[in-house]
Amino acid sequence: MTLNVNELNPETLDKLGLVQKEKRNYTFTAEDVKRHAFRVMAVLDKLDKSERKRVLAHCTKLNDV
Image (cartoon, rainbow, N blue to C red):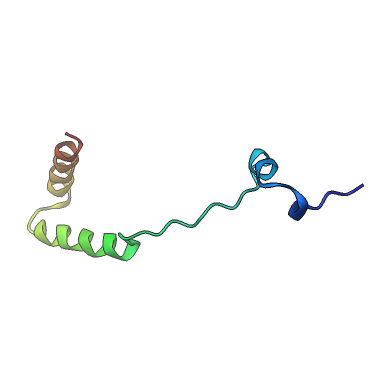
């Protein structure tokens, strides 16, 4: 006896983890993230690597508040 997945009801499919989830629609795309990252780094162009790291770490702390 074989079972066809297409014949199962949605509840059973969900319990088995076979339900296809809807794709997410991102309004903030990966390209947007990349563009904004370059803009932020352009502001920090006068700093060396360790200074940028320190400033960005501080920005992350401020963002978490």
